[in-house]
Length: 433
Image 1: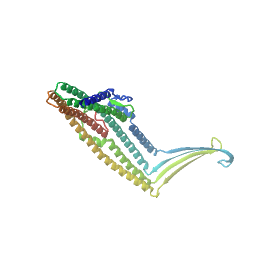
Image 2: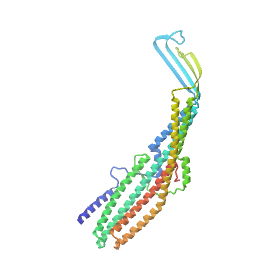
Image 3: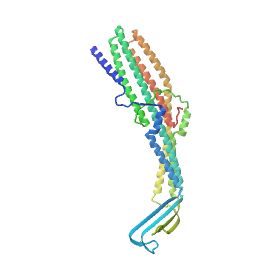
């Protein structure tokens, strides 16, 4: 029975060893290495969310241009040519003609429109401001997504290294247990347990390779390209050391956070919408004129001109104005409530991001110390096992403790980068420079 177990363990080891040595699966693309700055530059050019937000900003700018056009006169040119088989009187009524040419140039300008144009222009400008803030917000949200994906790929690569080191340690442990068995200082169970640990380590290494490969496609998706991207070899999860107080962070957020700026601009634009709706109760005044000519011969000889000054005072239109005003006021109230909700949510998110950064910063040093202590404990346990003062279970426990300490250190470093990226996205600024 023991012989069969050893044979099965041997063949499992061989198969897993071959799978690890093969590397990337056939048909899969090799990831291109890129720096963090390079990934961010690619995202600025290719990220779909940025393109959509840029289009929305252009629409808002053309809306402002249209609002400016409300202050300018309107002008149009009309023309016609008629030809028929039967004759008819010309415009003078003196002769019969079959053809007729005419053209007219008309124009007009609103002298007064109840101050609605000024409200519309203010609302359009605030719309551009809100769209600009949303575009900046999308920019930093995209930057956050790229940074998270980038550092996640770095973390996956580090975890792959940890699993590789674990396989190497388990191979050394199996070799050491085999030597001890030959010297009569260990049992066959120690060798079998070591072989099982090695097989488990190789399975974990395969899973880590798959996760690392998947992270390259996640990074490509965040950037907006199709080819997989991998962090450059020099990239790490080191603490960048942001030197800024909590009060400064909150002050920056309340004055320039994109989400809050856009919410405030939306509220102000909604207030301008109320003013525009109220202008429907005021009279209007328009100056218009035209110049026309027509005749049966070309070029036409009969010319005329006209000038008119007209106005309108609305009295009752079936409560349409009241409905428009009520909707505008309701939208203003909703926008004000959204502005308040945006500030409350921003304060909460800022506190959560700062908490993540502080917790990660405080635990990174402890995690580094734990790795050092766990490595030393493994070394001491290996020596005690060689002297027969420790069991294989003690050796396994020390191996597990070291691996978990290394994984925890990587997780704490990744949490720091995650919190920092989130804080930068909320503030709409880069804190790493």
